[in-house]
Image (cartoon, rainbow, N blue to C red; front, side):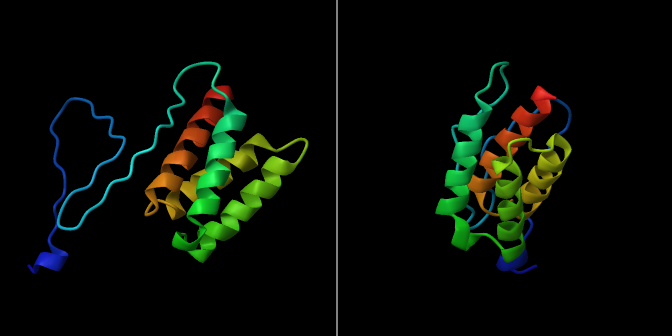
Length: 119
């Protein structure tokens, strides 16, 4: 196996892991965020503002499909009565598409976590 295709995977047996940022292998990078939405009373609008900021800062790093989902999410959130199920679906899709862009993926995950806790 060549160095460029080597698998530097993580293996764990038992226990519990909670990983904020992790990078493994040659040239890997991990960017952490300071967003945690695990406590009641989370400021969801502030998390959404941080997500929008992350989307703006990393727009050029995101695939076109992620930018399209982000635009749809923004439109849904701008409505006076956003549909929670639609917001959740868009956040899940954006989390998948934005996974390679760690700051955006982290912000999406925190908003999704906060939305799910609120429902």
